[in-house]
Image 1 (cartoon, one colour):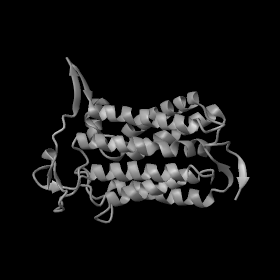
Image 2 (tube, one colour):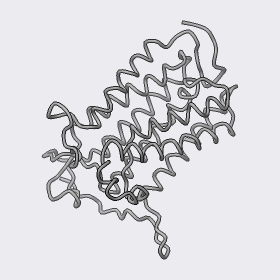
Image 3 (cartoon, helix red, strand yellow):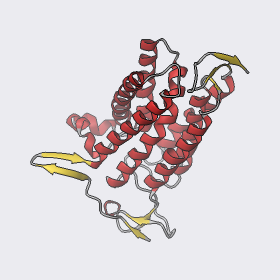
Image 4 (cartoon, rainbow, N blue to C red):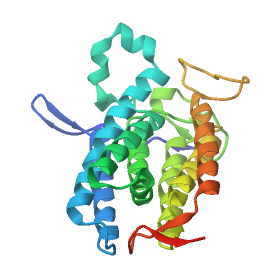
Length: 270
């Protein structure tokens, strides 16, 4: 059994100003995505550093706004209707990946229109950059002692003080490793080879959906929702299923036009 290391969620306090680790994790994630994006652009004939900076800004706004709106709509609508000012207390956590993903989709569409690129030409470039942000986001969840796992007797079960005295799965760490490290490694390697347009995006949807679906079996269901279907399915699992199906369809239909970040989009092939 492990004990939670008691990390102060506030990184720095200067008078009334408080800098929270949760917010810094988002900053680290967007900065890391920018660095990786610039690296990809340096090997590309169709991307440059300024475009990457604009794209990361678009996606950052989409992720934060969409993530917050998604959390409100999918998880705690009644609470926020009762206390609407709590919507702005983002440093306390409360972000939905699925809502953030929809926000990023809108950002990609807007950026594509601005730069005369198709949606999937942009999303194929973005997809391998996303997992590093997910990694930092899950570390932020861990520091905030939120989204903890179900009770377990495994030797690495961890006691989270805010969750009681029973050891639980450190599900935030599971997700940081799967959605962050493993997903990033697969997508980065996969996207380094010539692929049909949309194939990288489809693979991201499939893998994230599968990883999230199975990790949810170790994660405590939200107490204000419980199981939402079949007496065992959580909201996270329910929202992940359409991702898996959509990703599989996209990968099956992808073909013809190819994309490679070391060259131009548009080469023909099977």
